[in-house]
Length: 115
Image (tube, rainbow, N blue to C red; front, side, top):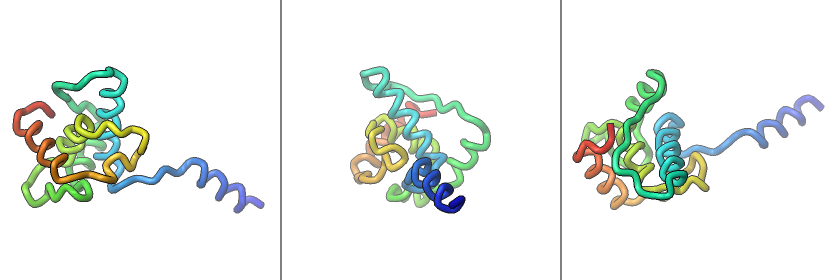
């Protein structure tokens, strides 16, 4: 009976995520802020715990190939939150990332709009 209850709790509480949760959490937070503001965001300053930033910077975001160009996942995650404010997808917010999204994110980063 305990095992059944444990499985029920897991099924209720677990959330699917695309990739490592740290960069996805940054993307989700920026996207959520954009939705709450009801307007576009011009600049993002990522403020989080050292551990979250460290972990976000040491992994890649699936589909972005940013490791090939030595770009920070934390910065890419922030930029993608501006570009893809699909908060309904929860931690799978970047499930349908497109090449154009990545290119737009790179542009925001190169313009120092994500820090």
